[in-house]
Length: 84
Image 1 (cartoon, one colour):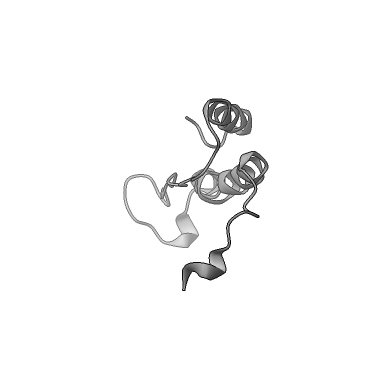
Image 2 (tube, rainbow, N blue to C red):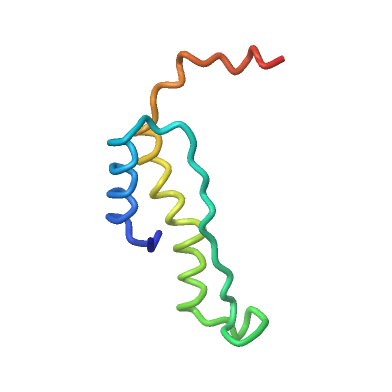
């Protein structure tokens, strides 16, 4: 799935919660494409590649967060302070 497609991410979250309550989410999407073809310094970085890095690594996670929080069961029944 293209994690930068916000509608696709929302659809995927909805499909998951239709099957069962959402209990765990692991965000494992990530890219590093500073300069195609090898490492390069920041002064020659491709702006389109940099935007893709930001969209996948940061923006997509920020879009996912409220979707997951809205779909997750309430955590009020859990008392994490008792984990001593």
